Each structure stands twice: as C-alpha cells, then as structure tokens.
Length: 83
Image 1 (tube, rainbow, N blue to C red):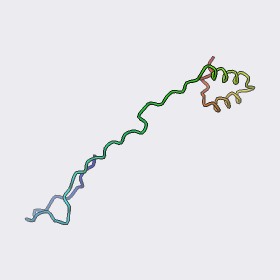
Image 2: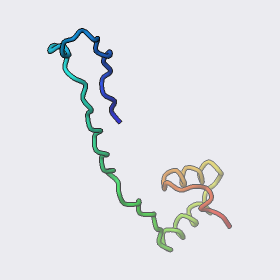
Image 3: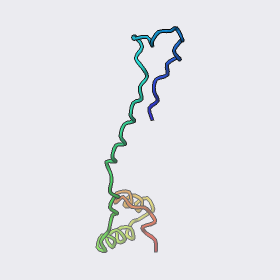
Image 4: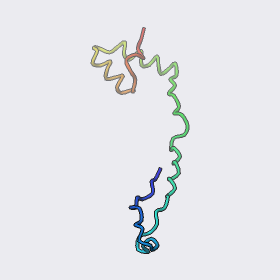
C-alpha cells in the first residue's frame, strides 16, 4: 500500500492552499507480479537399469570415500543406498 504524502494542515489565513504546493494524492499500489515458476518442479525418476548400475559401482568401491565420490558425481544422497 502506498501512503499519500503527508502535508501540514493548511493554516487558516483566509486564502486557498498555496498553488506552489501540489495537493496530496493517493497512488495505486503496483500489481502483484506473476511468479516465473508457476508449475511444480518435476521429480527425478530413475530407471531400474540406472539403479542397478549405481548399486554395482558402490558395491565394488574400495572405501567409503569412493562411495561418497560416486554419490556426489550422480547427485544422490546416501539414503538412496539403503539395504
């Protein structure tokens, strides 16, 4: 909401409001912009072949650091490897 500019109350001098001071006016609020992303993002889906490939890679990984590297490379969380 845009507030009108505040002007001091006019003095009772017997004359009209000074022509040099413009009267206060109410300015309409800008319209709410539409969101750029109106649809919900699509969830990623993984094929069975992809899941088996990742499980096979992590099963053959030598240590925990290698498993973490695989998960980072694929953009996965460790919870994706639950037994």
